[in-house]
Image 1 (cartoon, rainbow, N blue to C red):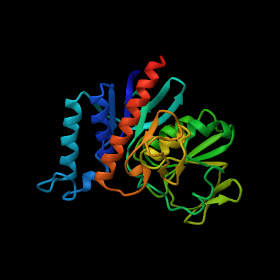
Image 2 (tube, one colour):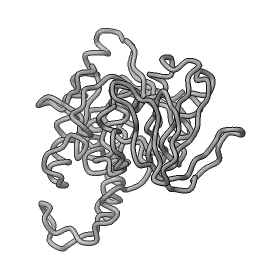
Image 3 (spheres, one colour):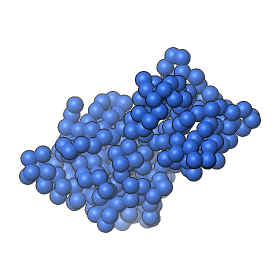
Image 4 (cartoon, rainbow, N blue to C red):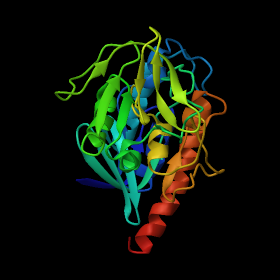
Length: 293
């Protein structure tokens, strides 16, 4: 398992900005990104400092990737499914491999994958979960569903199968984008609501049919910053990660920057937060090394 001083999840403006600073501080830095995110759709950027001519979002990101590599950062393409934390640091679990880090920055942007299903938000923490590894234990021998249709959903499903009594994939009207373990039911009907008052009791589909469930695990699209933050116990405000003025979460060594923290969703803000987070991470890592961690 590869080990780094700093692992940055997200290769947008916030993540790459942080990588410039941590690399220049001589910290081993890994940037993990799946794609270029929202910037890939930006055809012309004219409101960013120092731009004599408009530039596309893709070009801006690619230029900064070259800059980060030149300063010593390592960049890989991967999708992170899970993150855990212990006294020695963090372990990040991805499709291509696992990674260790003394400090982690979550900078994957703002999650745009959300299911508009009645009861989903209201029952969070009462049978609706965003972390199979964290909560599978509470559903031993019980009936659960996983909401999603991609690799992230299958990853969460695989954490549940050895523990739960039964598990099904609910795609909310979408087709599966990846293979599903043999014997696992895949229900492609669109969801109307999650049922239950104090605890989840099941789901109702738009065609009027229903399904009894003891728990529903949400795994839509890819695991965003807020999803990963919840897995490691960081505090969130809805889909935004709560940080202090130095971009630190309540989990020591875990930081967040960019759109995932809320506020003004602009490149300039993300770059500034990335720089601020990097300075905090540099200080944290140096303290950890001095303490012999």
